[in-house]
Length: 84
Image 1: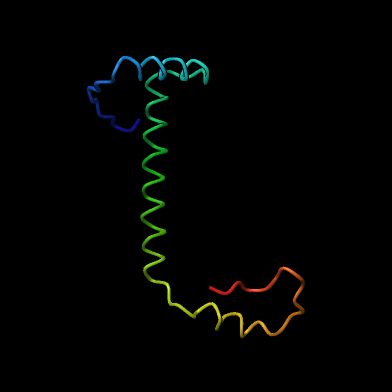
Image 2: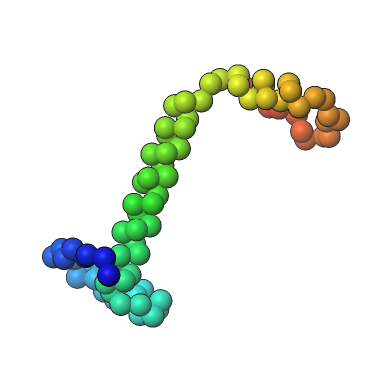
């Protein structure tokens, strides 16, 4: 089993009430509920960071080069590229 860390968490009573209720609805322990909530938050922040890094590497106009290699296709109504 992996090592785990203990952390004393101070939760306002109103929030703890909601946590208890939602954990019970999901049929999980409060501990498991809070671990899942923390994991979801961490995953979201990591994804946002990764997307920001990818956006920083983007080269304006690169998509037009890719599309130029694809050849021509018949445009259907609504397929137009919007002007800015």
